[in-house]
Image (cartoon, rainbow, N blue to C red; front, side, top):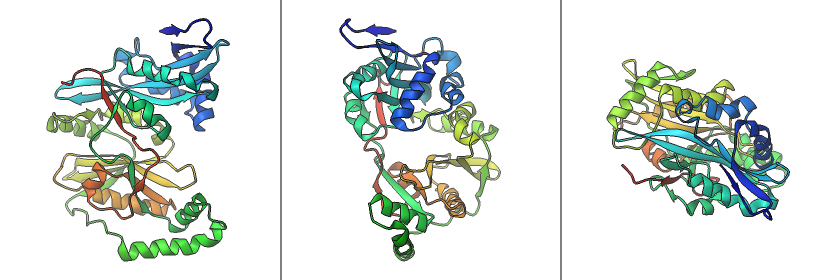
Length: 351
């Protein structure tokens, strides 16, 4: 759809197509610093397991275009699948909302188009930064469960972490003061930090190189076990698509917990360094079939050791639900980069 403003207006809004990739990626790179390779960008839709079902009518994005045909604003629209009480719900995940400074007054036009699209059942956004929070709250509400604006971390490389922290604080000569600061952090943790509880002895903890048939079996059991929970699809095809890029580039760790050879829990860590140079792994997912057991601890312990071995500075995870699950935080909890990273809106009445 193309929405035209009066002839005096400098922009039109229209649905994007794959041929707009070069201009949209240029805009995203200017605003966010990096963007995916072209094939990976196209793969967000063309390799999406939902695309055979939705591709003919689903808008991949909306763009703002000036009179010269130049894209000056865009907002991606990626379909993902959720399950609830036997129903499939199509979620519209908005991403990479960017508008050039001269046209910021038209930015809400994109957001309004996104929230009023026809084929989405719900909207979940998990990359809301501080500037975008207020506009999104005009349409959506914060997910009530969990403290998604908080993060917890385990320091795994004290010297590098301390140096980067001093640089962030603007302390002069961070290379000189980094070693004593790192020694102070290490000593504090040794004396006062809580320890992870011991892992269960009857569980085998292993790494996986990719997602295989075990994860499909796990997903089917999870669906049967939790029909009254809103579950994002984690079948084999979806996992393979969702994590394709970090898997291919060696930036993903998959840990599994096996009982009697059967997959009972798994977690996923993604390499995601901070803008100021802290090298970190981020715990991005944890799923379990044994809600009365804490199977994360063993996988977390192995990931912490691996971070130290590979000279990474920290392992980070969101607080809230996940932190409550393991029941222990080694480091102080501090604010994450965005105040409300998970926003939810149901477009239609709930089931």
